[in-house]
Image (cartoon, rainbow, N blue to C red; front, side):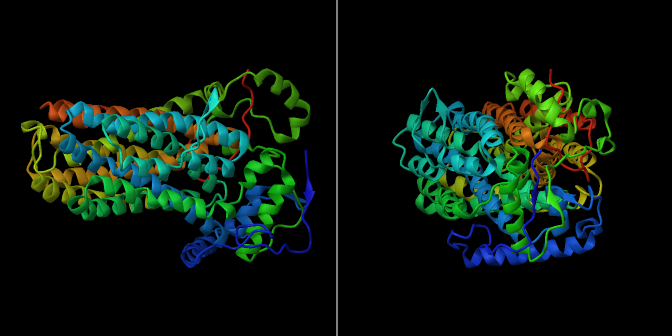
Length: 555
């Protein structure tokens, strides 16, 4: 096991880049760092563990977790949050524009309800492929490299296809000549958007364990910002310039990711897990320098030097875990037995099968319900089903749809605040279950037609709860998997969620257009109820639980 002594003299480095890199952080980045850094200092002072009072492995060594806990959440993490959040805003905008593009294109090109719903579904098809693929890439080649690949959409199937930036694909969508070309370009965008979950895993691995849930919910807040920005942009652009300009403007945030890629660091936990301890030490030195703190005395050793099984409350998940101390004698044997096992089979190993299957169900249920509620807002706009007429006048489209979608977008804000309040206080499981069942209750009256104000209010309440649940599942899922499988696990779960996203337009658009609103709502109710039950059967509550690097015993 590799160990490295911490150098006594401090390293002179830039905020996120190495000594040779140029400082390209703008004033807005510095402002973001100041705001989030101050918040982090408050939480840091409020939690004694962040001050270094937590468990130590010994006076002569420290782990990545202990280094992060001793430093707290500072300016460095704030910059990481700003970069990851920028990507999350971009993904939210690309997803939320589907609520406007579908109805607009349906009117422009006289599409059927099934053709309209396929504009949304094809994006999720691409995301399904991208989420699984880029999760594997990230766990094998690193978080930082995967973010770069995700931006450029490098996708290998026998041949190396042309790299396509999300922004370029989105921009080309705005000049699509016909329905087929639009479908193809949105599919390409979907492949790239599938790398989005890597941002959550990457940010998570820089955050100290105390208050980790709160910071992950704050990260999800960038999705809220993206949805509100897109609703505002659509209201301002479509009535005057049309849907093509909305697609063009919505692609701009994707290009911003490229500007700051040169200063993004690799995850120190990932580096340490891969045996690249000296590189992990360098990143930790950069964090300490930026946060104006010092690292713990001693040498840096790999995380999980000893795995405390009492931190894993359920024996079903804790059996066959091997401490890193024993890797020198065990890794060769285990490596030979698992060499041919695909990442998917590792996720379905006895140690992780129960959690994996339930997490898949939750991602499916959350995605199906969340995007379904978003689409229902436009389909039920005006207080009645669109099955009465296949066409919508431009006056109705502008006066009713934009207002209702804009209002419902603000449901993300209380959903974010609610999830931030409960995630660390009441735990991940109880919070998710309560929100899913409450969303179920809000949607139930919509089984029959309601007045516009009632419909908008109920959809608002349902979206508050489902967005809160979605926030928490993105906190829970990265915590449940070890570092060696974290982005593969989250990426695969996200892929399953994309299946829910693919199917929801067939229900929220297809069935409603076909005058089957009651059936559509009952299907959403069924999925929400089953998802709430799935939370109850999750074997582990991850609140306050440390992250792990390895899970063995996968014969």
